[in-house]
Image 1 (tube, rainbow, N blue to C red):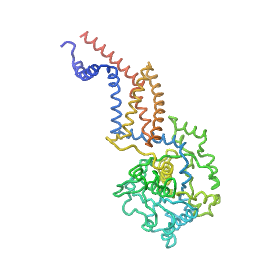
Image 2: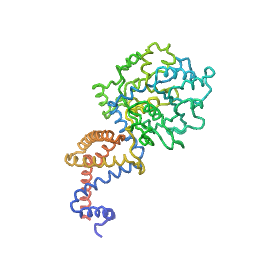
Image 3: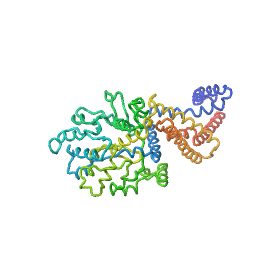
Image 4: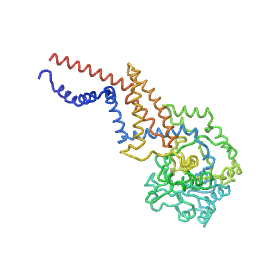
Amino acid sequence: MPGWGVNRIVQTLFGVPRNFAAWFLGQIAGWRGWSSRLLKLLPGPLLVVLVAIVNPLGINSSSGQISLDGYRRIAANAYPDTGQKKIAVVQIDDRSLAASGESHPPSFDFYERLIREIKAAGAESILLDLMIIDRDRQGKPGGLDRLAASMDGLPVFMTAAQGGEDGESGCAAEGRQNIEELRRAVSVEPHPMIRDQASHVDLFLDDYCGSPRLSAALAVYMHHCGQKAGCWGSEHDPLTSPAAFRDKALTIEWGRVWPTGIEAIHTGYRRLAATCPDGSFPDVAGSLAGILMPFGSDERFKAPAGCTYHPVIRAEWLTAPDSSQDVDHAALKDFLAGRIVVVGAKFAGIPDVGPSPVFGNVPGMFLHAMAIDNLIVRGAGFMTEWPEWKFGDLDMSGLAEFAAMLAFAAAANVIGRRIAPQTLRAALAWSAALVVAGMAVGLALTAGVVWLWRLEPANWIGVAFAGVMIAGPARTALSRMWQAARLLDTQANSQNGGQG
């Protein structure tokens, strides 16, 4: 057969399905143009679905976390300070122990002094984010009984010890529970239940480590709600509306503005008030500029060192007041009055930290404080995960992202055709501009979803990038170059065939 070599036969065979599909779609009246566009868009969405299901190298998870953290950094500038005014954080560390004449692990009397001073200040309740699991400690005999007795007359919550082998699950291993006398003395012994790089808190699970478990954040909030006239008995009361909190995960929101009016407590607070975020227009503008800058160090959007949303009350200010000359103890007492006091530890060599999108790595007690803060501010309307419906790793948020990606791809395709850049460099520049514009639109849509339905941000960064790359100017230019190369190849083959 003249002119029919092996290559041409193979090309013809492979072209049969494509030619049939093009013929079939072309027969559908009025759909010839749309069929061509859909065929060109099809490989991109299929690739995105594959990435969402298989999640190779954690690509989908990584961009999703970046999108969540990016939104939380931006929203932190407008986070209400209602909860900030109701929470205090007390930190125990090596310096606190040294100032109090203690060593690690501290004596029971150290904890007893701390709780006694917090009670005397008129605190609403105490959450002890501590692990007190052994009886062999320094101090005078009877310290454990004195510590247990100090918890009378004040709601005290004590997180259960977390087993090392179970990681984020929080299930305590055998022999890792708090001391029995303390378990009987506290109001409730909840679990941390913080997971996903400190982004989520499981509030109440029906089956957690084999039994129903309550999170520390929800336990404290339930007591707070029961003391507040506007919350008790309302839709925001977990006892009245348990379905709003049961088997739900709270997505931790963050504030970033340093509280005002506390400078009198300690001289260091005056310095922090001058350097920490204050919520002014220049401060917010600078924060947004640092967040939205595409390149640079992560430090560009983090608050200055020493800044926290809930100010640190050092334990020695309460347990060893004579060593704290720069503290106004009357102002400190006024500050603690009526507040939920979260007590935690930060010891050298004992890692108990989690990432904050605003402050970097923070001790675990700040995660509990922020989760409680979210419940006080939002009630039952806290930000939460999307409903469960999974196909591989593709859940409801993945389906929403897929639909949004198709919309972005269609828009990028129309814009790319109208722009029609003639060079690949121009096409890439236009694609980059469309990615930025797409991210801005994605952020606006994400904010709308959070505001209307309190669902956590979807992967708005990945959606905008994928949509533009699938059908934007760069792909259009590459497709045109590929078609031109194929045409030249076909012409060359025809000439060679004619010569043969």
